[in-house]
Picture 1 (cartoon, rainbow, N blue to C red):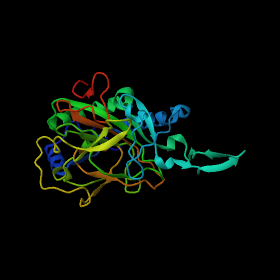
Picture 2 (cartoon, one colour):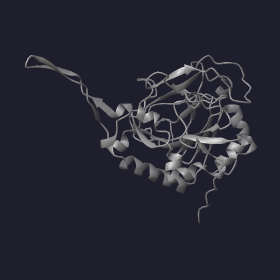
Picture 3 (cartoon, rainbow, N blue to C red):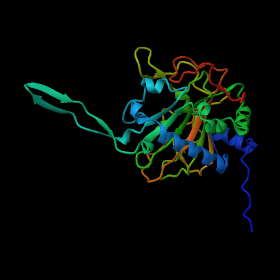
Picture 4 (tube, one colour):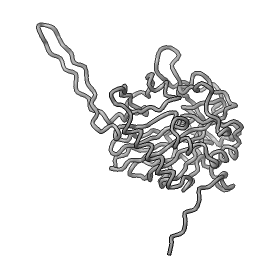
Amino acid sequence: MASPSPNPPPTRLTPEQLSTFHQDGYLIIPSALSPSTVSALLTETHHLLTSFPLSEHPLTTFSTGETAPHVGDDYFLTSGDKVRFFFEEDAFSTTPTTSTIIAGQQQVEKPQRQLTKPKHRAINKIGHYLHELSPPFHQATFTPLHVSIAEQLGFRDPRVLQSMVICKQPEIGARVLPHQDSTFLYTDPPSAVGFWIALEDATVQNGCLSFAKGSHRRTPVKERFVRKVTGPGTEFVEVEGSRWAGGLEPEGLVDGVEGAEYELGEVEAGTLVLIHGNLLHKSEKNLSSKSRFIYTFHMVEGQNEYDSRNWLQPPDGGFSRLFDA
């Protein structure tokens, strides 16, 4: 007897799903991508990881801010309309500084970083223009489901930006501290929504997401991640505009992130997770032998102010219009 055909991917949210997203700040949608689409995205990801030239790479690492400042070099800041590769911090070993006396002169050899993993097992993430420069990721981004979600959430001019594959590599995939996506993609008022798509099963062992349910209604966006005014680099500055998404009715306040309680979000490959821009979420380090590849992109309201201080600046022609796809 033939096995039943899998259900087709959904094309819009049900009223119950929409209510859950507004109440909890996130929504888990199983089987949002077909197995064939997941397979195509994984094939594209592995091609990208194995084919980029290491000899021309500045070896930029992506830091989540726990052990080193957030990334802010030119390779990162000019990646908004490119496909670039950012290494895991723990993918390198560092030789110690040495000092020797030669002919009466002190000779100092600076520390040298050496990759300890093959390059395809050392990348933290690929970004940030996959949705335009990679045909498989473009096709998986501009879908009827995503258009319907934007419409159901009340977006008037949804713009797509900051698309990434996050690899969460075996043994070294970095922990991500509690954060809000609108901190990094600030509009006034905040409007970011994350579309987080599992390309592999995400489990406790390999660093699945955790969510502070309902924190989008209790936690304002207090800081934003911006380009420094003087000199290169990035920094966090206090939000001077609105700290709450438009139409949101706050329910009390949480002073910081210390008091938040988190729920695990283990999901299977093909699952889409919607994440409100004010929602606190995090993930732990991957200490397992299995990777946790995911694809994510973000959506902001194009009619809200997105200023020149944001770290990610729009390419020529502006951020991609979801409704024009």
